[in-house]
Image 1 (cartoon, rainbow, N blue to C red):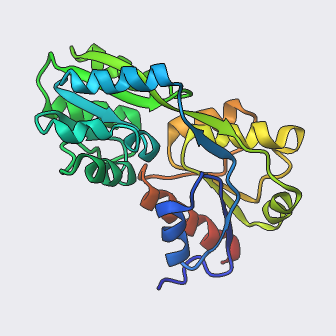
Image 2 (image 1 turned 30 degrees about the vertical axis):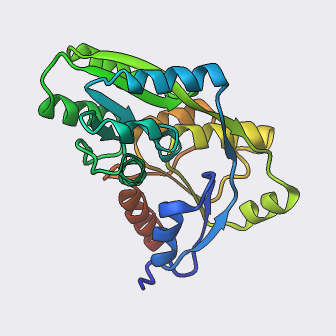
Length: 248
């Protein structure tokens, strides 16, 4: 086990500690899990529309998160549908649900990289079903459409803000760092902590990439570090560098 983050307490705000929490702990960090988002189901009509879209056998299904992958189980019945995902954790979960490997996975865990990887792999014009969160932006859909594909966008789940308890706030105040792996987590921090959002930030505030940084800064948060490699491993590496500079 690495000790690169020994002595560093890091706040993870995702719904689950997941792979990010595991990587941080493996690097020696004390991981404080303070979930600030909750995943909620869409209504029955939206759920049925997504299932019908998959059953209509498009050429491709694109999923942007593990929560989205959990809601596209119908794809397992249609082995001819190509699979694409943003991020290794999402791809792993989608592969489990679909019962086969994911076909397109970008090197960097951002929408623009998936567009680039998809365009290199797939000739237009393909019918694409995109399953994403209610708060997701339109960058991915617009990028695929600009490349000549027909994109059918569906809301697979809703993202709700969870208000932290007093004990959660105390744990945040004692932390050395917080990592934001998505724009929704950064916005949730700002929404949940309100006027205290900026003051409650630890000395190190690391983000996974430019999209998350933009969302965080738009919410009034000051970012100190951005991962050079836009992945969970990259954000941990950036945090290691920031911690080394701080204590060294």
